[in-house]
Length: 380
Image 1: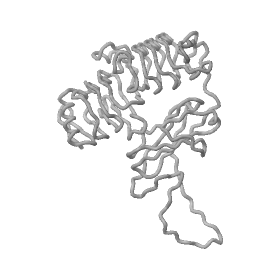
Image 2: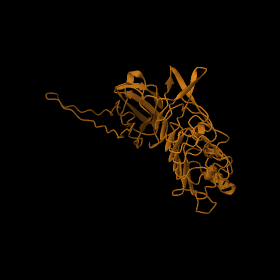
Image 3: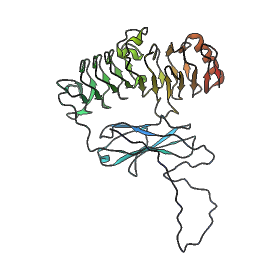
Image 4: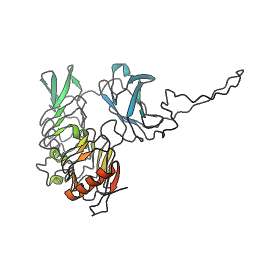
């Protein structure tokens, strides 16, 4: 589903009435429902907010605040037309939403004003599931596999015979060589080992935040992939914590040889810690992006090799051992909380990481840089 994005602009129009005497009102301006938190002592909220997810019944919509400026706690107001329907960071589409548009307005405690997303229309029904898929009842939920399906664009349903689909079986879609896309619903919790082994035409895959376990070699042989979205920090990647395992790497060393050269972007959608060896050896990637926990002040990203900078948002409380090991071009790290902990080998090598830790402990929130090849970090 393609959605347009706009920045909503609000204009207060003064109205005058014939025959009404002019009066002077020296009282302070009042907040309005459309633009809350009008406080001239606070900086204006900047940036944009968008909605992620398919606007279909029982699917989850999430407020994407990755490009939101400002600082402080984020508050959410979901609306169906003009009616408020939720105040969390995400919203589950209801049958009563069909035919309406959904928007989300966000405010931030340290800023004045609000930002509203572009409206997204709720469709009448979700896309029909792909014919031929095979289902197996396990307790009160179903697992799914390819069965006899032949469609290039595969849609896994959220429900089958009234029960949720929560698992993609091991080897479930292996060697489905003509599959170019697959839609995985938010009900799926686990993806088995070799689930998409040798799916050579698959160009991108979006693994929802509901998934808490991804088996080893799940994407081995997917040599046409250009983008992978994964709830990395909230999930167990089969055999180890770094992303190479789902591409078939058996150890941290030499991991880059398993990641297809076509893969340029990994988008990480959740969690509050960076696991050990998370990106160790991922030299084929050009961009790794993680918005951080919903409600965090901003996303963190590392771009290889052009920018070589990392921003750790205030949602991240710990960084695992060797998380950025081998990223020798890394010259800028920004911390947005005062108590993020990390190992002495989290960044590049032990001496570099120890020097960064010392500087961060002394300087707190801020951006730390070093000269290329140098081991001294200085707060900017």
